[in-house]
Image: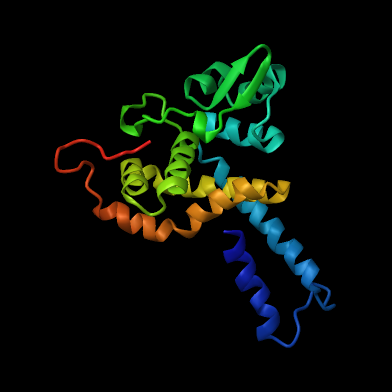
Length: 211
C-alpha cells in the first residue's frame, strides 16, 4: 500500500512541468511525500475500525510496545475502551498476560495446529499472523494457500491488517517485521490465485500442513 500510493503520487512530478500548492507556490517533493503519507495514515486508520475489537486492541498494543511486555494497567485501559477485557485477548490467543505484564505472542509462540474453522474466538489478528508464518516458511505454497482459502470473506481484512502492520513497522524502523508483512502483500495476488484452486485436503483426506 505505501509503495502503491507513493509511486503514482510522485509520478505526477515527472508528467507535469510543475506541481503547485493551493496558494500556487511550487510544491516540493518533501511536501508531496508528507501529503501522501498523511492521506495514507488516515486511510489505514479508517480501515482499522472494520476489525474485531481484539484485533484493534492488538494493533494499538503492538504500535506502543511492539513484541515487548507492557503494564497490565495500560492494557486494561486500552481493552476497556474497545469494550473487551485483556482476558478476552488472551483467550483469543493473541497475548500472554502474567505477573502484571502483557505481551503480544510472537508468531512462533502461537499454536502451530491452529485451524480457523475450529476457532470459536476467531480474530483477524490471528488470521494474519498465521498466514505470515506459513508464507515465511513455504512462500506461495499449498500450506499458505489453503490457509487463505479457509479465511473466506475475511481474507480482505487480513490483507488490510498486513498493510496496517507493515506501516507501523516501517515507521518504527523494524525492518524484519516490515519485510514479513511486505512480502505477504507483494505475493497476495499470486497467493489468492493459488488459494482458489487449492484442495482443502490431500488424496488421503489429511491436511498437508507441515509445522
